[in-house]
Length: 338
Image (cartoon, rainbow, N blue to C red; front, top):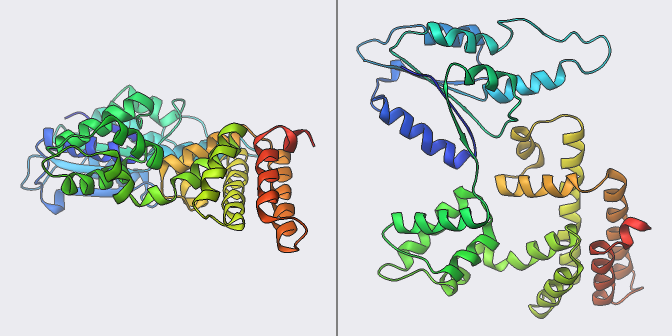
């Protein structure tokens, strides 16, 4: 029975794991033959011993191991850093021994390794790829994401209009867990008809915050025209300048944290937890913004935000004027060249 490695977007990974288990006829194995292990807590030798055990009163022993790739990648990142640090080499080190043990496992063992996003150069992934079926699951984007939303609505027995697809993409991005939940709600609401853009605007809670996040992204991505247009919309909606400034400051803090963590070699599966972000989409977006800025640039932008906030609170500048100057500065070249 082949071993499987399933990694990437957590929503898609969960679906593939369920399918692999169903296809192998292991959906109904007894609890004594179903082992769920966390690589951060389990010992590789114990995991290998479990995989080598024959099932009891079942045709299959199912072993799911979560996080082995990320653990090996993190260890690999730490090994070889600094003087006097010996890099582990040779076979059988860490979870590498699991890859080496796969060919000798009994045919009754179904091994499924589950992970988040890891680099293609991950040493354990490369070793397992020679011995396992590898299923890389990347979250769709652009046209592919639109097709995923359309297909997901149709699987629920409904349909969704192109403007509604665009609206929900703008609000949620490719956070598939959230999209799936919101599409379920929209499908129930629009039973018997298409899901429309007004449905999305009315029912998806992110609609109320969509403009603020879009404005902040335009600022961070240096799109001054879009940033100022969205800023005008927010002001028309009655958003307070200090609230908008607080949201800009929040994103800059996330960007600074993401930049610092990546510079220190923290791998992506760990970034979301350390940043306090539950959405893969938010983590990837923030990482992209962080990679386009240096730490001195982030610090300069952050100081500019604090100056604008202080100018408003001390009454030295009209709040709207101060905010407009801040947005024009951050979204343009001013904050970089200063």
